[in-house]
Image (cartoon, rainbow, N blue to C red; front, side, top):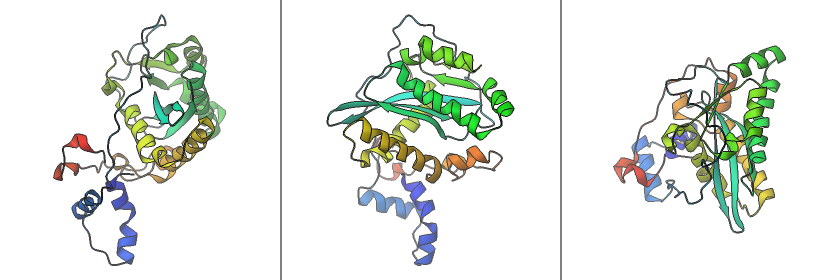
Length: 258
């Protein structure tokens, strides 16, 4: 968890113990004790777009979500273990930032990403009445890169069967799917790296725990310091973006992530 979130969560503790420390001083304290999170260099390739499947248009260029289950963004990332790479499929609601579907495997076959999609689709049905869930799914856009997993017939047919609109990036630029890339980094760098993961079984336990903590405990500056689960369940909560860059006090922005 980044310094800005920790600062907000520690407010009551500071008040109870009469600790006076501003945000800049707190951030400096983290820096001096080497507690700032460092960016991890991406090494494994997870997107293979040189295939024969149809690539769909980008439907979200000017779209700003106004409610949950309007836009889902999907991506696959890797996690290195002593015995090799594991691959994580994540589906995130773009409005609430809640991870609605996830899966981890030791391969990049399409069925692994489909398991994450199945979880996300079941989540809509469990949260809403049947008629409401069907209406939400029909208004939903699924956005991803052009990887073979997302373009595969089995994946796209499931989306079409549920009347979910399909949107894809038009290049290999991560900036076309920035939220998904951001969530990948949070799950790996703020949670999984601290768990003893050596195989798929341990990875599944770690990922389930990480997603639960992320959804229910981690406040977001972009959500007015609310958690994704809170915004997903109470979308009318008034929020205000509160982020501010502090790393420039000591390093270039590329050295750390908040």
